Length: 290
Image 1 (tube, one colour):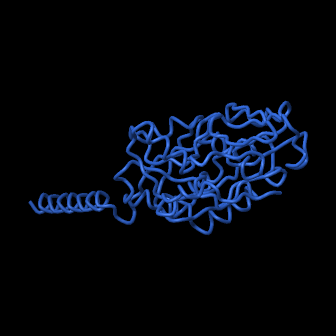
Image 2: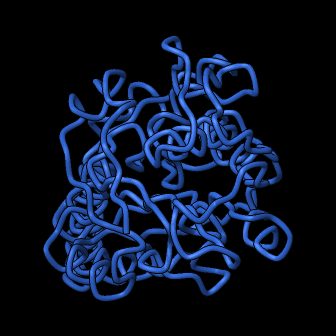
Image 3: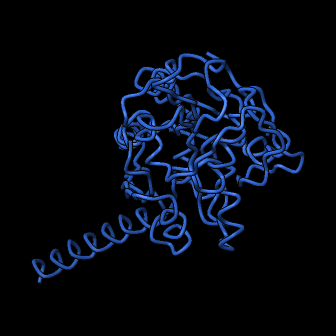
């Protein structure tokens, strides 16, 4: 009888202990590890791979999901296939979610990767001849970004109604009669062999072995419309594990990693969400000539 009683007591204690352990896990105790899926561009994941390792010390498991285009990451986020994404500028993001009617929002800034004007044929802006061919990315926001860069370089003038989106009709003055050639963004480095110059996004420039310091002209690091962001589904911004993504990206460790790894081709740009959203008056921020 005593053995049966002892057995019952032991089993009861074990059940109570297990129940308490489960309750702690469900309420997010100190040992509770959260998992988040983050969509990133397949071109360069070094920063996020570094963050993945840092996150492990914060009880956060980050699964990186890579995409080969600029469309699927937002669609996947909207469908709940991932928890966040980090690959796009705030200007591109705003235009995309408006066009696609997606309920997404930005929760933090990451970096600015300055677009540059590169050339194999000319050594300075003033060397670009009349009738020169200049390649620009053909996606609307990056097309506009390329045209704005040409304006800031003094090569063209855009109409007053320019809002960041590119088209042939938005050019007001083209004193050198430049031939603007829209091509797929990934093809802009290859056009250097044929065109006089090419406006190239930083990620494609890095892949092609180009360095920002070799550009004829490049964007300012304060060009707010082109700061990259972390985006989530609307309503998810306050989830602690997603806020932790922003905290990690803004940490001194990550800032130092970016500066050391990218050497100016990608620059930490840590601004508030309010600053991110109020960029519409920043289209004419001055760029930096080499």
